[in-house]
Amino acid sequence: MKKIIYIGISVALVGGAVVTLMNNKKQNEADTAIVAQENNAVAVRVAEVVTGALDDNFVANGNFAPAQELNLAAEFSGKVISVLVKEGDRVAKGQTLVIIRGDVANVEAQTANANYQNALNDYNRFESAFKTGGVTKQQLDQARINMVNAKSRLTQANIHVGDTRVKAPFSGIINKKYIEVGTILSAMPPTQMFEIVNTSSLKLKVSVSESQVAQLKVGSIVKVKATVYPDKEYVGKVTFVAPKADESLNFPIEVAVTNNPNNEIKAGMYGSVVFGSTSANQPEIMYIPRNAFVGSVNSNQVFVVENETAVLKKVVAGKVYGNKVEILSGLKNGDVVVTSGQINLSDNTKVSIVK
Image 1 (cartoon, rainbow, N blue to C red):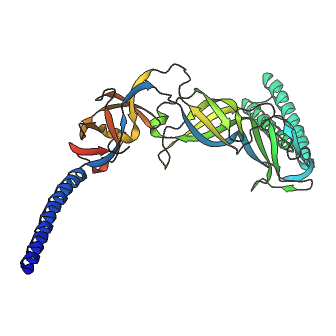
Image 2: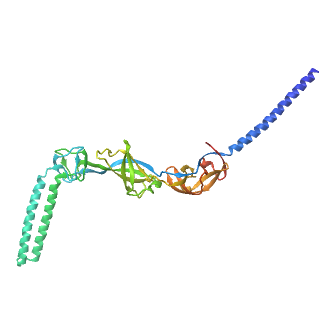
């Protein structure tokens, strides 16, 4: 009797276990189906289409360069007998910097002057004699040629005399001095004498992208800052916009900046220039993040999330404002566009939004 009871209990336990296992299997299958359904949705990040005012300013960085700089070289061979400036001196245009020994040049100028006076006297005599028939027209013409040639040689000799006094070609500062009293200068190859820079005004050289250069024009007034003076602001003027991009597909720009009386900005310093509209009242526009576009802004395609589905839509893009792009048509205020995950999407793909 007891044996029969034990057998009954065992059967009941086995039956209960089988029922439990079957119920667990059904639950697992249901859970797996839910997970599979969820895994079909592509995870994306999104942003909302908004309308508002955007600042179209952008900043470009570069280095300040002097408005004028020159390595002044010798044009005349000779020995330096006097150096009238030193490094750091301010010089004016036309100021004498160096005196070169000019004994030979002076003698040549005196000889040339004497020859010219003789040729001039001969011409005057021949001209008077020609009026009375004392000389022929050919003789008078030859006297005129001799006089003109003598005057040319005198002019050249006087230029050589002037070359013995080397003068500043423009106002600036002596940045480097390469010669001393006693230096023998050579005209070929030319001996370097000074490096002169004019920092009363400077050029800030920067580069901008293709989308940015379209907003720039020569003559525009811009804001300029020097990195070492973050609290100071200078006024600049666009003086050059490159008509051709460089190897990096950027466009070189030059901005002229007037230095203050103390010449705070030094050539070679880092600076930045703020390009863009100076108007305080910017119009309101519809815009989306730049990374919402499929591929690039030029594609004019974005994914819009509708009922948890990514729908590929064609739009018309306007101006680019940094990382934001104006939308002229194709979207409406409040639409939700995909900004990350587009590579995994095709039209009408189910999506799940990642916060």
